[in-house]
Image (cartoon, rainbow, N blue to C red; front, side, top):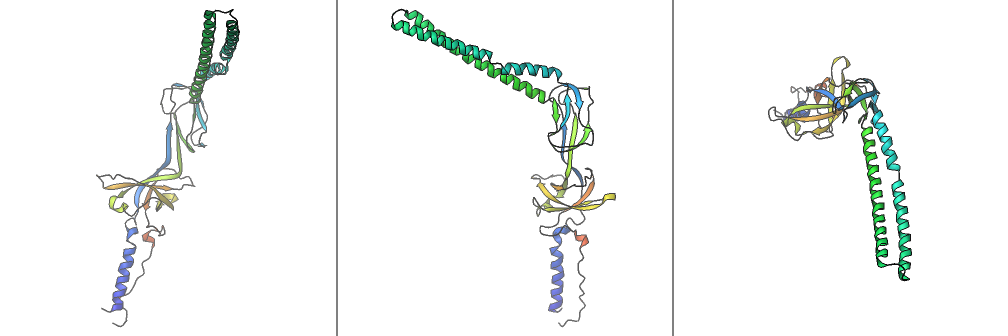
Length: 294
């Protein structure tokens, strides 16, 4: 065999080897899309549903109100506690009493220097000042406690207004206005489908070349077939010993709002390559029956 023919054979072999990393995933690994966030919300305490402020399918932003419990009684209690928290009458009275006791003590100390006040009277006046100081401290402490009680009640009332912690879409509503619910009963479900997440079970040996941030090729099938670039956002640290697979999570943009739950095929092109799968590439056909000189 001529050296030129040998070189051609080596070139074909090496070219095939260079494509091998994508061949592992050339046909795609089957998986199912899911929401990138999926929360089912509940109230922390029992109550009666006062208002449902959204309907299924509504788009919501983070912190948007969703459902309110009937809080009429709690609002009245909150107003009462707010009035107590803002009232400083006991503090003002204690301050005035302390000021008066200090004036009396000053007069008695002068009288003692002139010999017209007994030691007992002076000690009694000093004790009155001390008691007045303690009463002022107690009034301030009780005022702080009233403020804390108001803050606690305010937080309780705020928790009777359910807001969404995520931006997304209202998927399900499990309650109706006027219905009573217990603590932790399911009330509403909100999902985020842009981006979508895909958890792929990949053979353990095939995960070795993968890394976070690497591109993934996501092939949607059916009537709305499409191929979209995603990226790896998580590679599990623990493999499934029974199937010898490792879960790889892929995030894929979903600007067209495809529903979660679609079956897709995932492939992982090597770092630095395009996301076109190997089956779309054409390997040049090279004839070994050339007329080159040996």
